[in-house]
Image (cartoon, rainbow, N blue to C red; front, side, top):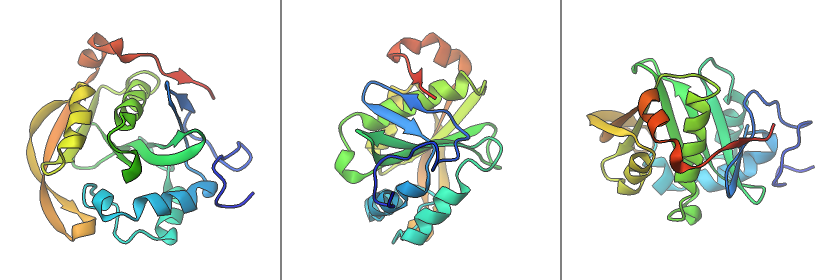
Length: 200
C-alpha cells in the first residue's frame, strides 16, 4: 500500500478509538496512510485561520506529526472523517488545561463545506463522548468571523457562553472566539438527531 491510498486497514492503523458510522460518513483513527490526504486538505489558509493549532502552510511533516501524536493522551479521541473511504477532515476531543471539561474540535476540507458533513461528524463524536466515554461536559469554540462553524455547534445543541481571545497559530496572533458548552443533560434530552453505529 502507498500513502496515497484512501483506506486504512487494521494492520496499518493502531486503533485506540472505535470506528463510528453515520448515514454518510465513517469516522476512524488517523493512520500513516492518511498523511498525504490530510496534508493536501489542511494546507488551506481558510482552514488554518479558523482553527487554533493548524499551521499555514501545512506540510507533509505536519501531517506526519499529527498522525503520530493522535490518540496518545488521556482524554483524547481523534477521528479522521471519511466519505466513500477518502478522508475529508478531522473531528475529535482533547483535554485542554485551561478549560473545565473536554474540548471538541473539527475541520473539513474546503470542497466539502456547506453539505452538512461537519454537523453529521460532530454529532457522532458528541454521542461517543457522552455515551461510551461518559463525559459530563463538552466545550467548543468558533471564531466570531466564522458563522458556518458557529451554526454547526448550534445545530448540535451547544450553548453560547461568551467570547474569549484565543491564539491562532496560522495568523500568529490572538482573535476573538465564541465559546460554547454542551452538557450531558441537554444532550440526553435532544437525542433525536439519529443513531451512530459503532462498527469496530
